[in-house]
Length: 297
Image 1 (cartoon, rainbow, N blue to C red):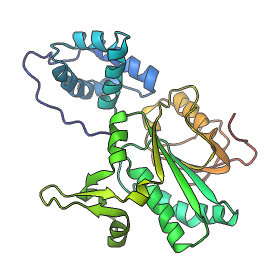
Image 2: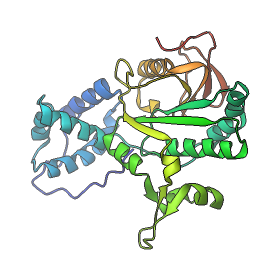
Image 3: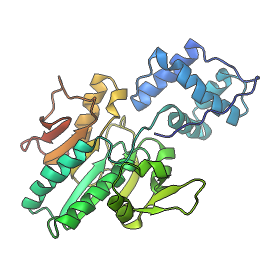
């Protein structure tokens, strides 16, 4: 999620978010976004929202809350900005690389042996784009080393934050974001900027062209923007913000769009233990949907 640079706040801005004000914001976030905001998050929320007060020339959190929750078009826009500021995106290229190795070594050969002509993937909490672009690189590498085995693929990438989706579409990242990648991968899939003072890279057009970005709130009753069934869904390090009933509800909605026999990847600290879901564990936080579970309901 987006890195928020907290600006210095003028003396006339309220210095502290009260417990009552925090709970009003926290309750809204949990109800509408599904992210838990325990009391220990108050200072973080206070720090990040002070930047919004400054941007709006407001002197108190009471003024801000009245503005944000006033139920008009301006408040709708501010609510989206508030969510962008409060939620935190942390991601990198080839994060939790064992997942991409399992995809390359096990799932893609399996799909190729089944004669799948186009593999449909979904990065369901894509943040600023590193994960879906990594998937695009993995798929192109498989095509390069296994000619004709999987002719085509498509990647849907979704996130609740419009700010990080804008960054994802631009596909521009600090040079250090690719430091861990091999020279060959960097040469094949990234362009290097000429600015020596602030070196950056951009994902190449062919790799970008395989990814389609859309905004999605996991708390929506139905994920109606999802078209077609997916062979592979990555939803990593997003469910940790939810309580267990919400986690199960989100996963259930996700796998409605997963083909029978398809694969779901969760983050390294996430689990489906104790959930009644048609999934079997096939690797560390890697799950396969039951062949008998059917498709979209």
